[in-house]
Structures are given as structure tokens and as C-alpha cells.
Amino acid sequence: MMNFEDFCQTVERNVVHYLPPQFQEAKLRLQTNRKVNLGDMVGLTLTMPGSNIGPVIYLNDYYRAVSDGSLTMGSALERIAGQGTDALENLRRNPIGTSDFQDLGSWEAVKDKVHLSAIGHTRNEKLLGTVPHREMGDIACTYRINLAGPGGADGSILITNSMMETFGVNEQQLFDTAVENTLKTDKPTLNRMSDVFGSFTMTGRPRPEQKEKLERTNLLNDPVSPAKESSADRSEADREEVERNWWEEDSEPDLQEDYEEDRDDDYDEGYDEDYDEEYEEGRSLSDEIPLLVLTTQSMVHGAAAVFIPEVMEQIMKKMPEGFFILPSSIHEVMVLPKSLGASIEALDEMVSSINEMQVDPEDQLSDFAHVYDPDRKILLCPGAPELNKEKTPEKEQELDPNVIR
Image 1 (cartoon, rainbow, N blue to C red):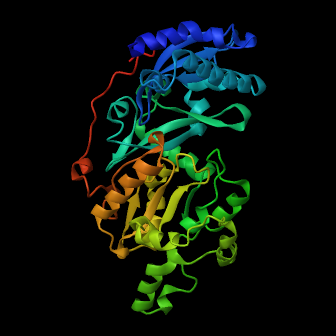
Image 2 (image 1 turned 90 degrees about the vertical axis):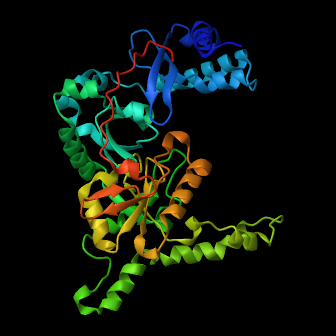
Image 3 (image 1 turned 180 degrees about the horizontal axis):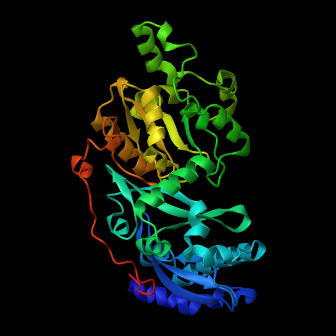
């Protein structure tokens, strides 16, 4: 059977014959990149004459498909060529200027584009040895340069240790700059699950009509208290009741009523009336508890909001009894009040199960629930206490992109 290196070299030599005539002059080059959660990935870069910008088609999954017989080599080459053709066509219709890439060596040019990005520690130990970062529990804060892509799509570049040295800054400067940019251009948001549900387009971006609603229902807009009247005018019991229930209030109940009225219309003739009873019996912990969603306005790499001290302090004011952070993906986390009495074992099981069944591998953040420590102002990982120790990962040598791994 063909090994991975032979497969990659075969693709590099032969895929050009499957490209349409307008792209047969493309320069093809193999390169190895270290990807978040996925490890070392080998990609085929396609660039047209006169350009140093082109798409990268990763080959690892194609190799697995050829190895297990689900694709022939010819079919794999056709699909790789098709993927490359679509990307090159998109690039031709929506060209990217080279200035953004040429300026990546200048701190002045990139500093307004630096943003936070959260990734898991246990999933990315090798990668973390090559990038500036800080950690809390099993979550690491890294830094990305946001760039505009073709057709209005956005991309980003992970800042490596060598890039930081080129910029002439340190990790603290990266952090301070990224926090300032996030608060200025990609504001953190905390919303009830019911407000976030249905807010995404197929590209994973917020629907335009939902942006206003998400901002209107952003619980971080009220920095002191979710209640309307002064807490000084209430008894201690009243205040505790408000703190227990404020996150459960329906901010737009009319929408919920419309949903209840219309729901029956969605059932087809084959609907099983026993489904509701079976569903109730099979409900998981995630169905039983009210959750808040912490992310940013773009809903891209929004989980890193947990590293912004002002955000966590605001949540603590609203949940003085304390709260858990459930790492649902690199784009958002769930916030759960400790007053609900959920056990850390049940929460760990829920997070791990959702990761396995619902979250793409490249988007997974951590399998462990975290708890906020208000005294130290950090997140801790009760289910894996060894992750709470200060970690100083060994410096990893940055990848040689020309070596196939």
C-alpha cells in the first residue's frame, strides 16, 4: 500500500492534469502546517504565475479515504483538483491584495488586527510550544492576525514565537493589544441560549437580522445588576431569588409564543406521537439546565472572552454564588450558575459527550468543565487538577514546511 509521503508526491505530480486549462500553469507545492486540534497537516498549495497567494488543499483526509478504499486514486485527484479549481476561481473573482501579507513583519501594520483566540491545552501541547500564549486550566489564549479574505470572507494567521520576535514585542503586549482590539471591534456578548438559537448562517456567521437582537439582549450591557430596581430595596431572600432566576427570563416572550403556536405545523404525516415521551426519558443534563452563551459579536474565536478580566468580573457580579464555564467550542463557551448544584463529574461528561457527537474536531476546545475562582481571577479545572498547575511547555522548533510528516 502507498505510504503517505508517496501519496502526497503523487498528488503533487499528477493533479495538474485534472485542472482546467486556465489553471494548468499553477505552481504546485507541498507544505506542512501545524493546525489547531489536528496536528501536523500536509497541504498542496496552488499559486498562479505572478502571485504569491493561493489556496491550500489538505491531503490527510484524502489519503485516509484512498487507504480504506472509499476513494480510488483517480477519484481523489479529481476531487483535489475540483477543490483547488473552486478556490482559484473564487480568488480570481475576488483578488486579495498582497500588501496585507507583505506587511506581516511590521508591528505597526498588524497591531490593530491582533485578536485573542482560545484553544485547548491537552489537544495542542506541541503547537503551544511554538506560539506565545497564556493558560487557565485546559484553555490556552493564543493570538491571531485577522485578515480580509476573498468575497468578504475573513481569515486569520496564528502568531508564532518567531513572528513575535520579529514584531519586537512580548506576550504581555500581545495580550493587552488583543484585549483592547476585541473590546473595540468585536465586543464580548453574553446571551441566553434562546436568544442565540437560530442566529447563525450556513457560514457560521450571525444572521444580519439577529445582530441587533443579540446586542439588545447582551447581558454584559448591564454591568451592575440584571434587575430593574435597586437591590437595596429588597430583602435578602428577594435578592437571592433574583440571582437564581434572572438568566431564565424570556427576553422576547412573543417569539417563544409564536414558536409554540407554529410548532405543530412542522410535523409531517409520519410524526410519531410517542416521540415526546421518549425524548423526555432520554433528556440529558444539557436539556435540564439554563445556559448562557459567552462569545463575541462576530461569533468567531469568541471563547477567548474568558481571558478578558472585565468580562469575568461582570459575570461574577451577576452570579455572586459563582459559575462554571463549559467549553462548547473555540467560538463560544456556556456559562452555568453554581447555585444549580450540578456536579463537576456530570458537567465533564456533558462537555465530552457534546464534543464527541456535535462539535467538529477542529472546533473543539476542551473536554473539561471549568470553574471561576474570584479570588485569583482565573479559571480552574476541577476534573483534571493537574491542569491547574503553572505550565511552561518546552519550546518546540517551528515546523519546516517542506518536510512531509
